[in-house]
Image 1 (spheres, helix red, strand yellow):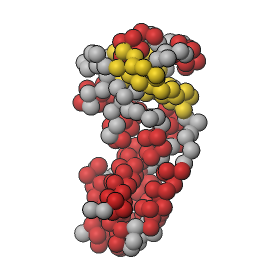
Image 2: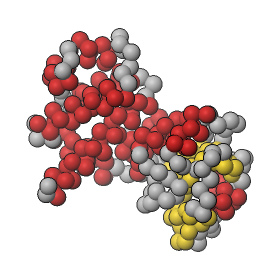
Image 3: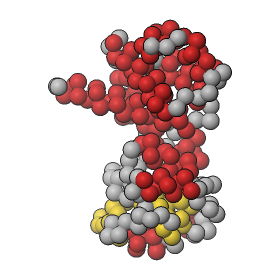
Length: 243
């Protein structure tokens, strides 16, 4: 496989993950499914033929008449869109790759920093008054940066490719999600991106959702809750850490 083909294959795989994630997290998955078919300029008939189903089934999913499909069906749906585009030269896939590479970082980032040296996970938690709530405590783990994220803006306004770009240079970092109600949505987003930060901190909630904890345990990611009063307090506490 040459470099161009390899790059296209990787880009196709990443775009598939982005689209699947957007559909799964959407409150109106049927609208997102239809949106992406229209973006790829593929008819219901062509898509149905690629999937080996009838056009009426595709129509039912896109109109909401049929219950939203499970993730396996969604993955097949998106794979079919990408395959059909590739058969026509892959122009839509390539256009999105260029767009993802040039898109500026969002204002969903409240603060982002890379450390000059490693910071112990427990030391980091003590700094922002964060308590670990999962079985995996990341003993001996060193952190090399953090990103403080406005979770409402990140989840409601950003595509998955943009969500991935919030994480900075290294995944060996802390993701701090603010304005969190239960913690479930940020953890689902983490699972779908297939990235594994060294620590996730939730801020602004009273109780962590059990599914959020379960995802953290399954993905082997330490999960903590900070009880500091405001996000400004967190940013202030972290000033100078890792210098």
